Length: 141
Image (cartoon, rainbow, N blue to C red; front, side, top):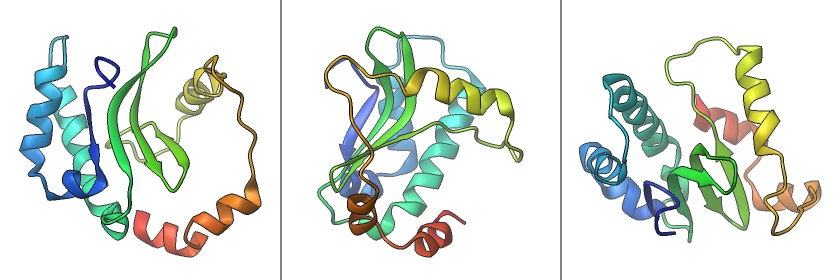
């Protein structure tokens, strides 16, 4: 994925890297001005993901930071590719409340087809691939 993201690797490699090494990789690929708030946000994302992805360390899975959405000029904070499912994560590190504007921002642009294909939800298949909902909630605490 050259030039389409700032950082991409396997779950295993991501979990074995020091958090400052991941931050350094993000910086080396970032073309804008890196602000203190940007660093704090990235560090928060790294810390959260290095905790919650541990159960899937040995999966054939990818973590991608700051993926650029074609033709929209926006980036998805983190994309996880796991068990044939694409998870798009939009972080609001430090935010305690769900703010309607954040939800609308994510839903407004991220649900548009990207021009390659339109995907339909297959709920039963997803339930087979993912751990039980209770376990996911426990891991996210």
